[in-house]
Image (cartoon, rainbow, N blue to C red):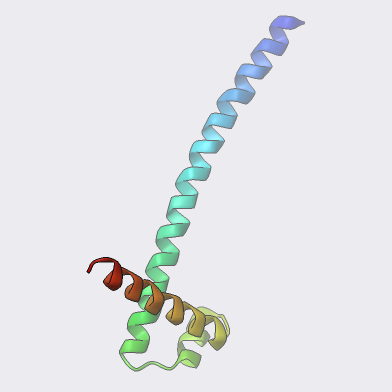
Length: 84
């Protein structure tokens, strides 16, 4: 009985390690995708696209697009001020 429990624990630990590794990889991928999306939104507005047109393409509200732009501007300002 103890041997079966030990095998089961080992299997669960292996699955947990694999799951943790996959979760970290997925988290990094999501972070990269969000970063790319935000940069593209910022670029689209710089190119003259309206927030409503961008929102329509993304399937979000124009307010959500406005917030993405505001965060991108704040991050750019913080990077510029931090580099001086």
